[in-house]
Image: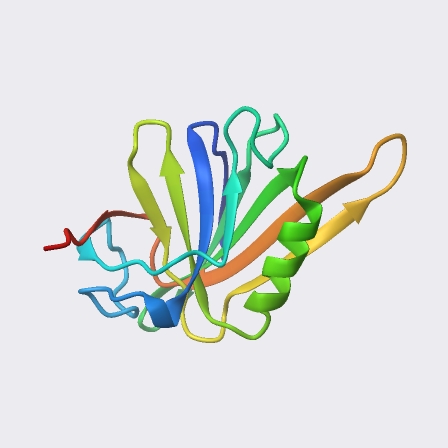
Amino acid sequence: MDNCNEIFLNEVTHVELVPAGSCTMPIPFNVGELVTMNDCTIGSATMTLDVSDGGTAQMTAPTLKTTEKPQAAGYLRSHDLQIPIQYGYDDVRQAKGKLAGVDFHAVLRTLAGSEFLLYALPNTSSVSVEDQFGGEQKQTVKVSIQSMSNMIKITRKKSG
């Protein structure tokens, strides 16, 4: 039986999609049930979505739906992140093109400055942009990641 959980990310101010090759994590990707990870090196984001007031996202909060499926090695989690977009359509589409076929992780930054990682297993991350036409044009960025863990609170490695 699969478990499903959906949360509204009201406290999130930024979502960054970062190529996995530019990140160094002190713990291997296949360790399940991680809650925190310290001293991560996170590379430059290929796509950054400003979810705060006046940013690229609409006033609707992003949502994260996580489905857990039991496996022999633990739980396989499918994370589906949806961010409604208000501005920056061209930049989003251009960044989406750069992420095609590239493994990436998602970093979510909160209003309080905390950062959370959706750590992607190899060959399981994808991003798409859904267009909706009608009274007003809307777009939604949809990120899909499979992982062995839920969101992981991270700290970045201090330089120097």
